[in-house]
Structures are given as C-alpha cells and as structure tokens.
Image 1 (cartoon, rainbow, N blue to C red):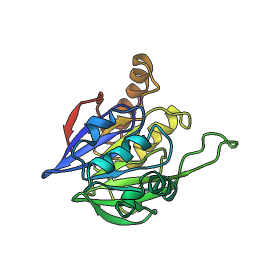
Image 2 (cartoon, helix red, strand yellow):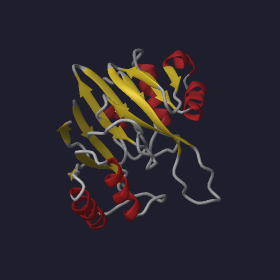
Image 3 (tube, rainbow, N blue to C red):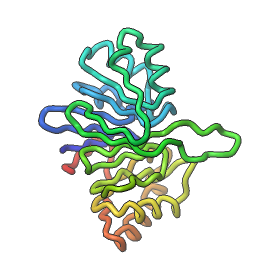
Length: 218
C-alpha cells in the first residue's frame, strides 16, 4: 500500500482504490489528506490529531466516509455532525475491524503522561493490514503480533529521546518513519532522527525520513 505523510501525525494510506486517513489534525493539510477518503481513524482527542471542523465538513461532503475513534472523540463528532451519527464508530483496545477495505486492529488505551496535573485521555494505536502501526500519542507496543512498518512519534511534550529509541528497539519493525515532528526545527529533527536511525539499525530497524507530501510503498 502507498503511504503519504502529511505534517505532524497525519498519514494517508491507499490500496486498490481505497483510501484510509489517520489523524487529520490541525497541524496537517487535512483538505488534501481527506480527499476521496473512505475512512478516518483518530487516535485521540487532541487538536493536533483531529481537526473537528475539517472532519465534520468531510462527513458532510462525502456520504460514504466513516470515522473510527475513541469514545470521547466519537461523542464530540456525533454532537457536531448528527447527520452522520451512524457513520461514526467508537473503538476500544483489542477490537479488529475493516475500514475502507483495510484490516485494522486496535491497541493501547491511554495517552502517554504529559504531567500529573494534565488529565490523561484515551488513545488508540492502529495496526493496519498487519503491517503499519500508528501509535498516536503512546509508546504501547502491539502484543502478539509483529509490526513491519512503524510510525515513530519523534518529539512531543510527553516523550524524550531515550523513550523514542526504546520504542523503536522494542517494536523492532523492519522499517520506520517519523510522525509527530511539527514542533521541531530542522536542527532538532536531524539530531533526534540521527539517534533513532543509528540505534534502531543495531536492532534491525531501517529508519528513513519523510517530509510532508512524501510517499512510500509499505
């Protein structure tokens, strides 16, 4: 399948004429990413992972579009897009389902801790086609299954470089690409990616940079 990265945490997947979008947030080019999409997966409620007005507009314009998200996100979307309530599905960890022709398994449950005084929200990681794993804002490793392609949250208020590297080492996917990188300048991104690439390679993971708009077959 074809993977196209957009700014920050948004990716678009295309396979056999089907389109699946993950985390079209406010930092991303949601209009381009959502064009012709059959389904959207949302990891959690933070704005950098879901642009609610953009998704509501897409649901209005595309009557075949479906959205899969944690309970809080699903409730918000049903409130804002009551006309599309039947096309908005709540997802729990451990579920397996089909979205726009893609086989999906859900993992995780909680967002990584930012600070004890900041409430922890629900977060779902998605494994697509037993291949590509998008963890959202979490370092939860899928259990009982191997990951071939990993999307790595390289920088966030809730992580540090050691945790990023340990996540890559723990998953041990053959290939890895960056997400969650909009808060970094070119210097910072290069520094973190250098560590991930060098240390990940010791454990069999080939890490490669993707800029917004870049595509790769996975």
